[in-house]
Length: 203
Image 1 (tube, rainbow, N blue to C red):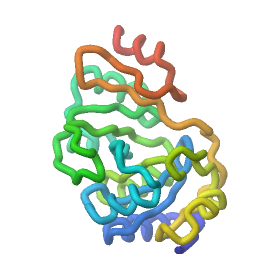
Image 2: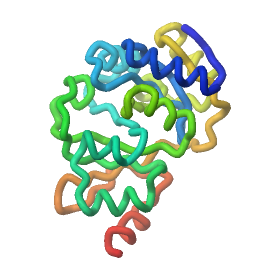
Image 3: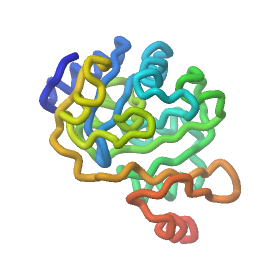
């Protein structure tokens, strides 16, 4: 397992590693994330096994809204929320436009996506091809890592690389909203409040 400071060179190396099937821990705007390239079936399986969770879809970080539009159907509601809250800690569950392995979506026809304002996560997504897995860096049911040192303690040598971007300032996983039906469902509370989401959608 490698442990690197979050320099541009390290992030580029991490992106290349992901494209070669690597699993990387990295900072986001909320907590540290555990990820890989979602199109790599073996790497996606490793993420699920490392996290000890195989019953829920893996959320994704997109480099930008253009990358998001390539993998999910962005309707008018999604576009409104993206314009207001992206980059930011809002994950939107939307109909998928691509076919990833069962390790990513577990048979669902939807994907949870967001664009991160964290410069490390954003650059990493870009370097890795536009989209990366971004599940919280923890064993399922445990507290997510808030720093690279906490991630090292949790995962030991189970990941290929940890990028140290300092201590997370978020402290709370992203808000998750389901936009796949006429009703808007708040699946997980987080930094973006439900009332603010509804205000934007009604505007």
